[in-house]
Image (cartoon, rainbow, N blue to C red):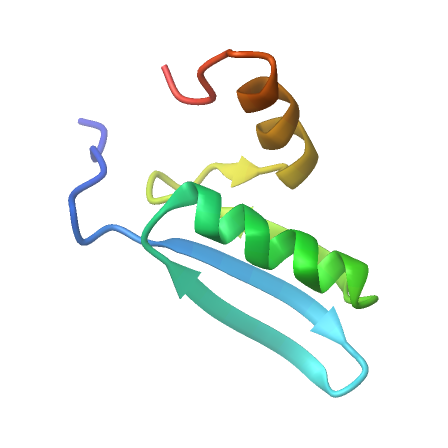
Length: 74
């Protein structure tokens, strides 16, 4: 049985910076992508987003699909 996302599910954003590893959570995918892109611009390494189902999301792929009118999640 797969676990469906619930209203309390969260996206986990992780990265590696000069001061060590950082981790934050967001409820919405778009907010997670904004944070990930901010960290990338700030020079953090290994930035990734894990969705509530355990899948790794790419900030750039998410943005391009949304901008082209596609749905990221099926």
